[in-house]
Length: 353
Image 1 (cartoon, rainbow, N blue to C red):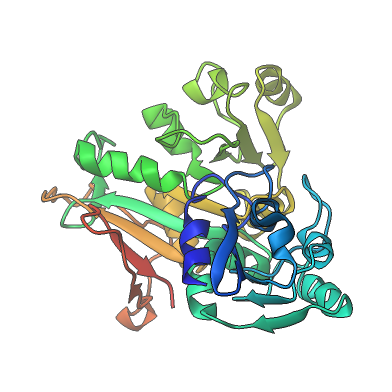
Image 2: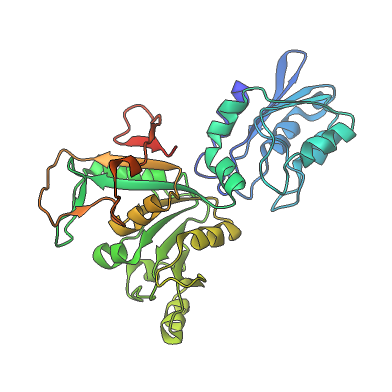
């Protein structure tokens, strides 16, 4: 199973919105076939491993870090393929939490006479696919908040100057973090101030969604996001846009999505549910401060990636990383749990309780 987990991780950043899956076929104590899901839309790990095993799969044991799927997507379901392969036993690290599967694959295998065992290295498997597991459980995307701050917790001067708080290595690492998610989300003020492209680096072979919270639909048609919308998707979440603005953005390829509700601003919970309904399983929120503060205030995040710079900005008007409503008491603070980052990574990772 550890080999299956190691194989699964090879698909990191490319399988979204699918989970990372690795598979190993063992017969008479020897590996006779193995594979992993390398990209969304490509063959699943079980299909690759069984093809490599061929006739040697008969009577073998198949190890996989996630329950074989049982539904038709862009590829055929895996559970029937496994059952027809002649595999005698399947060892799955965990059940698939996706409502489209959720035990159906395992039941199909058992009905076909295959012995099924579940739970080997389950915690490791859940940690590997934590974004996928969380989104399936909460029916909204997994949310990572990213903040680049000075030592006194500031992200810009009072006039909005923020270039550059972090160094080139930290900025490259932030672009690398984007690859782990289906898309990146920012507020319109960040777009108006910085005119960012919001792309991951290195680029992915899959679609990467650039999402803007823009209540009044102020995204300029001349912005770099709008100008590149036909090459990489740009979604704007707004309230009730004026038809001319909507039509102008749609004409250059921007997808305009209206989010219901009574508030003047885009309601975050509704926005996240809308994203999840459109196959966004994880999103990296990059700001600005009011957007980060709103996610913090509503407790709508699972992780925080914090990039610290050895700077002290000072000043009463310099902008904090997390805006939003003022807490009444220190007791209202959210106590986070430390996470593990790759060795040498120039950021800290924290988990919401």
